[in-house]
Image 1: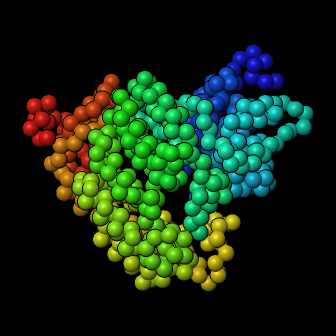
Image 2: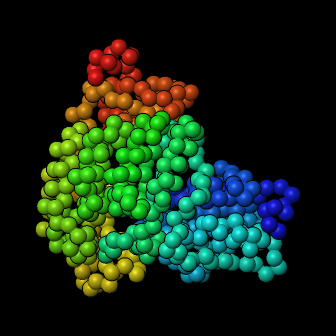
Length: 455
């Protein structure tokens, strides 16, 4: 029975794991289902369809998902017609093997299948057939960029705007090109129309999303062109973008960051390693000196910029000396924030085929990760201690954990908690950073007169 024939709307719940692109994809699926009459609910217990939207970057994330769908299967005791689906990168990577690992899953759908999600659910027919149906939707479509489909975004002042899906880089550790396909860019006209529509809904901050977002090109429009155009949309006060590739950090891009007031003084710049040999084996296509030149370009042009990065330790064959070179890069650049990981083998990637003797023992890999985390946190704490006393513009995003407080972020992506109430979500406030807990600031809102003097 299709949705149009149903006496009451079916209810769908989507639970997302992974990166910002996955969060955006979750909103996209909600929008697609809502457009076909589904009611989106906030608890799996209230749903007729439960979709677990997944990441495949690391094995740990996949193990979490397998545990979660096993737990969700318990809901079928109360609702035998419940459909459980696994979508996203893990679904694409594992394919039909996921049905063997989790036989209670009804739908396995990769990232290029979302346009057909309602029809696929109609095929499953709510599990009401005499012989239970299972379905896999795994085709990759080189032209699928989800243009023309709307996301169902949570209310709030900020929004993710995907401009690119897939990746043409072939970093040897990364599964993304294999589960999301080649780079596919949206029309610049469509992106700008979406941003204008978001302004009408009360959004004042957007983050442009792509696997290597700054490699974007649509016809004659480059990423710096698009970034400038988005920054000039009336009503947009802040623009961010993630995740760029160092090779496409160009003088033209950095000039837009410096010249457009709406573009935030923040840049995520994934280094991955501080060793030239490891970077070559990762197929990152730059050297440590190249990376440091990009850092210098950005800091010379946007002096108050806050830099963050991604780092992988224990890549197969990484020596102790090469690990120390990564620590030295951290100390040299002094990133405001670092997302740190130990290498996770992904079947099908070139790195998975390296000689077995290159793979580090688990304990050694974990020790390196813990050392890296200690260095990163020490640098972050030192930087943040030096910023106590600054007056920053904060966009209030939600209520804080403590009653009577709100939480927001500065233009440089620093998290700040201060006194306020939920009625002010979406407002901008000028806040003195009074103290830091290491990663988060506690602040005090200042009056207009005091704020003006501080600026």
